Image (tube, rainbow over all chains, first blue to last red; front, side, top):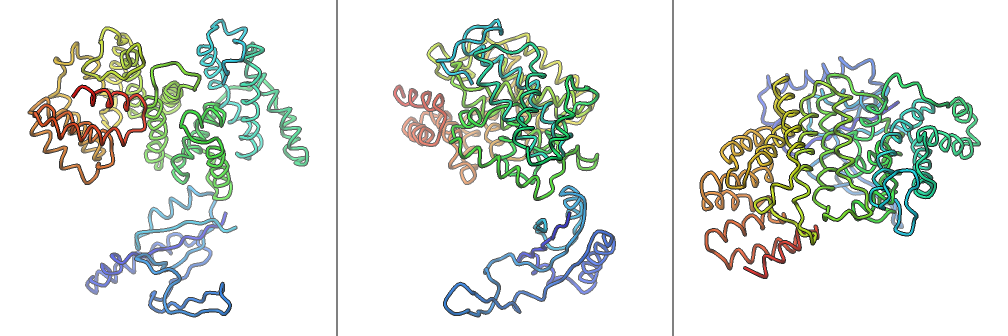
Length: 112
Length: 414
């Protein structure tokens, strides 16, 4: 089955990352790189999104499309990236997510 | 479930309605889960298999009270499920072919119900869905029985189950026993379902054997089944011992008018002392063999301290306080600290205990027992007016009729 893992950053996590020293930051990024390398066999695709302040949202449910600055939902938690994986079942993807070394929330959704 | 208008079951040998209901429940519990497990293995489709089991269960609940429990209930259920399956799955030629192979007696090489339990109690399902699904699939309850037990509309239960089944198939929740590495965490999810079930049944009971199915029976049965299926896990045994220790005190929990009697006032000669001794021994054996304490073993040990005390005054509160300290270490929760404060009251004094209870206000301000405990302590400290106010608040917050009656009564004579 195919699943998408949505990596979700919190304000606190972003702050911690910012406050890290250069060496610490590099180690954090390396851990993420290692995670992708370790699971390369099941990861079919992944993207890291640019920071949330670069987001633009368009609403199409009015008479005219409305373009606004920022994410579709203002909140303390924002999606920072995606990975698509192909595994046998939910337990396998949960096992994978458990070892994720970065942002503190991962939403898992099957691809329909 | 039998309604009062139904004739008593013919062949159960126990004529009163309540008893025949329990016999029915017992027989269905023994067979529904096995039937579900073998149908899932056969069809490879949890949802379709579950529908067939539910159908067989509903048919049994309708017909057995009239016709009597058949001599071979398993074969009876298989036949109904198979016939129904061939009927409703008409267009699924694949399923039909598989169902046609279904024969009894089932070769009993392995007990597949453990897989079933792990799927029903998967942490990716909503907690109330886990409970409803476990009751339905593993214990063979009907939607109506689950709804009655939890005092929610049948449509709500049906919707929970439908959603859960969709999630199982669409999110790819597997039908298997988790690997050794995942087992402790997943087992905790299973045990919490059994524990919640027990709690619900135990707290909502009114002392009368009403027509409603006794969830406590189901919880004890599930715990015993798990002890057999997952040997070597002392927490499973701890949970079983906990349930049995509480049940052993059941007969004294209500007076002859169905009112709840507090532990201090219970007639201890009405407790089942043999059951207490056996459950205590079970717990001790598990604890000694594994030396891996956990929340259920500790709660059972606390229950054993109470159950083994000859009088309320002779309760070993110092030991209970030690056990609560350990419990707070394994499973820190405001409710555990509230119970611990009661032990503090007996080991030290009400003023110290009240300070600890007051410190929990932020977490437990909407919890009836927090107010009731405060009321007790305030009363002991002579602060009658404040105690009364706490009792009133507790009364507003409790949904359990027996507890409400007890609190209401206390308000009239304090």
